[in-house]
Length: 248
Image (cartoon, rainbow, N blue to C red; front, side, top):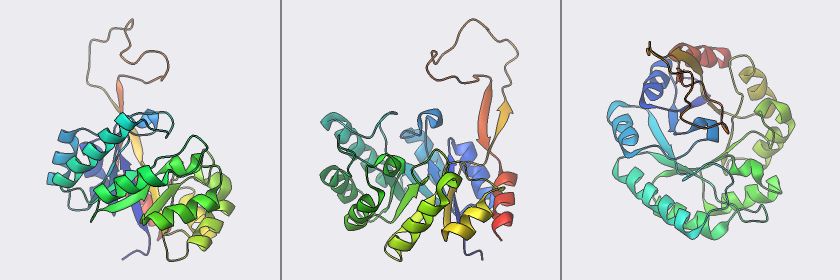
């Protein structure tokens, strides 16, 4: 068995199944990937749990944008954790910050308490923190199992040095999981130079829509986020498999 673990950022149940087929250890199920991922639907979580034999984590994020949440949004996240637990998810993926760019200890603690017995990952809200090393210690003190991070850069390979520092400082206390832009071409270098053992990637490829009639004048999503509405991005088992082979 490989000493490395791949977590696949899955945007659908179809992507979850491809991740499993390709040998992933775990999936993080998300909606709205172009916005950085938001909480998937009840139906997505329920069917993913029904069909998956591998670990299933669910992102708990009520909207795109920043990680400073209102009291109302916090209540929504608590409800979403309750649903994820009822549906049998193995873990949740969370992250709340204060206006000053600090880890919000109270809000995160309440979410972690609600997730008692489930694995907890602190997501890339970490990459928006003011001080990564101070934030690392706070997240460890909260009892999270891992931190998903790109090393405070758009892509993980851009600051492998910081990822290595985080891995060293974390020691055995918490898992540092590089993510963002990780692929079969760079994962070996990131693993070797950072010392990380878990990695987060999407392993997706475009799948053309079956629609024959297409109205060129109408877009569903507005102009803020440009999406090809006649192409779906779906995880591919062969990409997951080739990434694992690159590591091994």
